Length: 395
Ligand SMILES: Cc1cc2nc3c(=O)[nH]c(=O)nc-3n(C[C@H](O)[C@H](O)[C@H](O)COP(=O)(O)OP(=O)(O)OC[C@H]3O[C@@H](n4cnc5c(N)ncnc54)[C@H](O)[C@@H]3O)c2cc1C
Image (cartoon, rainbow, N blue to C red; front, side):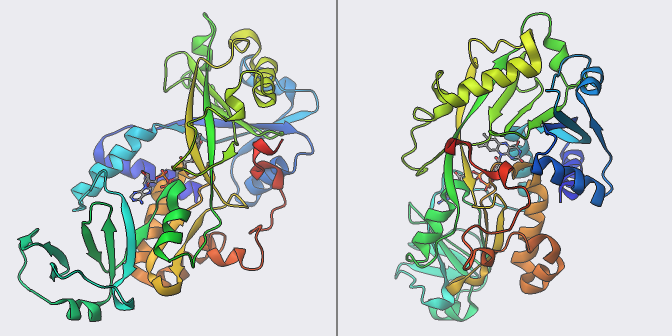
C-alpha cells in the first residue's frame, strides 16, 4: 500500500502542480533484538524493498556524524521515507475534488446518517427532486423530475443530516470522521454499533537546531525521516515545516473524548518534568548531541488527536448492520494514516461504487482492516511486534 500510495501522491501532485511530498531516506533504529525492527527487516526482504542494515559506526559515517546510536543498536535505512505538508496536501485534494465535480461543504457537522429504505422519515416540508433535497420550496439545483418521499423510499440510498438541518441524499455514504468516528457511528446506529476506535490526545514537539548546524538537518543535506523502536517509540522529520526546527515526538498520549479534550494541558509530554519529556530530551541528546537545543525543551508544541485501534491497524469496511453496504467507514488510522490517504481514498471510492465485488478486488489489503477482526477478539490482528503499537502514556 505504501508503494501504491507513493505513486498516487505523485500523480495528484503532477495533475495540480503542487509539491506536498518531500522524499527522504527513512532511518529506523533500535536494539538488535527489537521485534518491530526485526519485522521491518523481514518485511523489506519479503517485498524486495532496498534496505541497508548499519551498525553504529556505519550510521555515523552515513549521516556525517549527525546521528549516533548505542553500541548494541542497529539501523535500517530504506528509500521509503519522506515528509508531507499536510495543510497543502488537503488543499490539493480538495481542489482536485472540485475539479471533478465534488461540492465541498465546510463547517457542516453531520449529526445523522440513515438509510432511506430502512425507515427514514422525511419531514413534511422536504421534497426530493431527482435525489436532491428541496426545502421550503427553494430548489437547490435545476432538476427535471419530481418524486415524492414514497418513491424515494423505494430508491434506497442514504440521507445525511447536518446540525443546521440541511439534508443530503446519495446512493452511498462514506464516513471518515477521524477521532469523532466512534461517537458518530454510535449515535447514528442508536447505540447499537461501537467501533473499537479510541481518540488519544497527543503533543507534537519541535526543537531548535543550534546555530551553525541548521543545514545538517535538512533534506538537501541527506538528513532522513526517522523512528526509534524502543519504548517509548520516538519519531521525527528533518527541518522543513519551520525554519531551523526539527520535529521529534513520542508516539502516544492520553485517551480522551475529542469534544472535551484539554488541548494538551494534561498531556504528560507537555509537562517539562514528566518522565516522557525527560526520556525525549535524553534521546535527542544521545542521538544528535549538542547540535539540538534539548536542555530547554521544545520551542514549540502542538496538541492533536490520534484515533487508535487496539492493534494499530486501520478500519476500512462496510459499516454493516442496518447500513449494510450503503455506508462505508474508514477510521482508526492510529497515527500513521496520512501517508496512505490517496490509496485509502481509492479503496473507499471503489467500495462505495462497487460494493462486495470491489471489496473482493482489494481483499489482500482489506483483510487487515475489516471490523469483524474484533469479533470475540478485542485485541484485533495478531502481531509479532506488539511493542510499536503500544501507547506510550501507559509507561
Ligand atoms: C501528532 C500526529 C502525528 C502524525 N504523524 C503521522 C505520520 O507521520 N504519518 C502518517 O501517515 N500519519 C500521521 N498521523 C496520522 C494522520 O494525521 C491521520 O492518520 C489522518 O489524518 C487520519 O485521517 P482521518 O480522515 O481519519 O481523520 P482526520 O484527518 O482527523 O479528518 C477527519 C475530519 O472529519 C471531520 N469531522 C469529524 N466529525 C464530523 C462530523 N460529525 N461531521 C462532519 N465532519 C466531521 C473533522 O473535523 C476532520 O476534518 C499523525 C497524527 C498525529 C495526531
